[in-house]
Every structure is written in structure tokens, then in C-alpha cells.
Length: 184
Image (tube, rainbow, N blue to C red):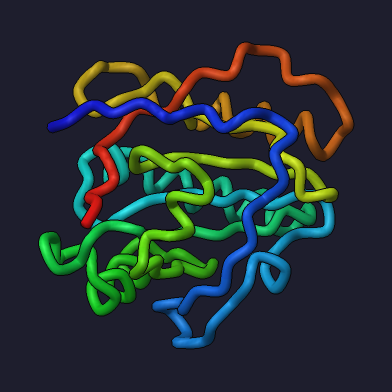
């Protein structure tokens, strides 16, 4: 399995705008439609990556814990579904249902959104404040498939708590590691 690191978009970058189809509802949503009152988590994931499969349960728990606190949660898949059909929209719907993802799972067919965010891997996490400025980008935690570290979501949870409670992030921001986005 390929190990690709996040590109670490500069903090303070304004959230790139988009309008994409949600594979759960078949509605199109923009960033502004889905952003939260206190901040917005945009994550690039896919259906087949072992790194995503390793963290998806914790990602869903984080979404459920923080949406009620004003954090908008958005998942996007940008993989080339022609070369990787298991990452196509129909399978995205099934993946979301299987993993109880009660937040939009958008399909970036043109890959323009991934490029605008400078996303590199799955999973790749971007947390924006209520002014749509990048507050955190990087890893969920130090756990990886097979490394024996318990999954906790500690890095991302710390970042979201810091955003909500107007604190500085305590730990350095480390890049996420995952499968590379499957570019066309």
C-alpha cells in the first residue's frame, strides 16, 4: 500500500468553494451549504484505501460528536472512478450506508476540488474556522494500519476542541498519511 503524505496547505488559506453531488442524497451542495457555525471539517476519503478503512469508525464518531457543537462535516472522494470503479458514486452510497456516515459524501468527478485543496492522500483532513480560514490540516492521530497504535482521533479532536474553545493547538500539526489520490 502506498504511503503518501498530506501537502500541508498553508494555515489561514480560505476554503476553496465548490458545488458537488452528494452520493447519499443525490442533491448538489456547495461548501457554504454545508459549513458549520463554528467551523467546517472537509476530508478527502475513498472507499477502498486501507488507511481510510482503518480510521472510518473514528471519523464517524468525530462527526457525530462535533456536528452538534456547530462543526460542519463534509467527506469528498476525488479518485478516478474509471480506473478505480470501487470508488465510484454507487459504491460511495453503499460505503456511507455501511459505515453509518450521516454527513454528505460528495463525488469530485473532475478532481478540481481536490486540486483546489491541494489534497494528496486519503484520508486528508482540513479544518476551517467560522471565517472559512484553514485552522488545521493533517492527521487524525498516529495510528496507521498495522502499527499497533490505538486509534483515538486525538490530533483532529484536539484541533476541533481548540477551534471551538478558542485555544491554540497544543501539538505540532503532522501530515496525514494514506493512499495517494488516484488522479486521471
